[in-house]
Image (cartoon, rainbow, N blue to C red):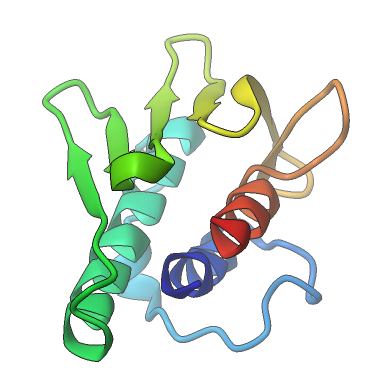
Length: 138
């Protein structure tokens, strides 16, 4: 749940609807939203920062709750959850974000420039909302 709470904070960088943003705590400078960076890479940067913050908070609050986020040289996030599985996030060259979830498998998210968020064209779900919902149940 700590991971999910931190991801809710990263949603502030992409103007997600208020129901998802309960209490924004991440300062704007931590969102890595440089205008020159493509939206997909900004998304990866923001989510990775939230995962690192969640890991640090979890290490203090509940040392037995372990997870390991990493960012490789290609900008891919891996979130290792031990026996619960592994999440992967990748900014694709076509501007989409690929999420691999141990619960639902691969999903592709497209950028909505008007609303400034990533969503799944197949079902309309927002990337950050899906991550928060899944991580709360793991």
